Image 1 (cartoon, rainbow, N blue to C red):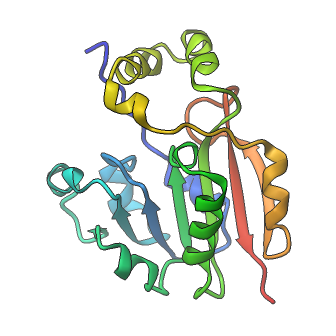
Image 2 (image 1 turned 30 degrees about the vertical axis):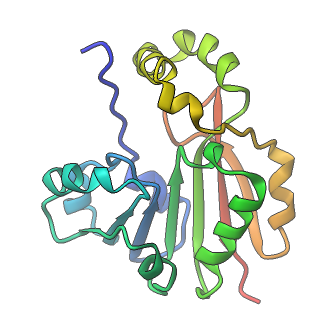
Length: 201
């Protein structure tokens, strides 16, 4: 179908951005799931992926999509924030719906009780929603039609949409080693990724 857009994040790419022999991943803002079931099962460096989203309507869909021991679905924010076991936190297509202060608080909450953690923020937009939408057909026609479906949705347009300049992330250099990369999602020319590796201090 023309409006059916799916994307999976490659676990090998995630692993290459970290230095962990075994990854315990938290997907914060998982949506309908961006992980390939077969890769999750077979990827030996992965111990577990925990999926969290504030939209509890996704729980049923995720339970039917992921039926293996390596995937845990936990939509309890309190237990997520108090879990010290995660060493990789992925936020994919999440940041644009947060204000700067919300993002700062979230990064602090997710990393404060962990000695060694890497936070991967991917699919960060360079430009406004409308500008990006006009350019999308040049880069990914499927995602263009998917975005068209979202843009004509009144509920989606109610969501605040924020742009984070690359310079914004320099504020985290005291606590993290900050690396900016091409997007590990599927729009490397329209969006980018940020890797925050917590410093051992």
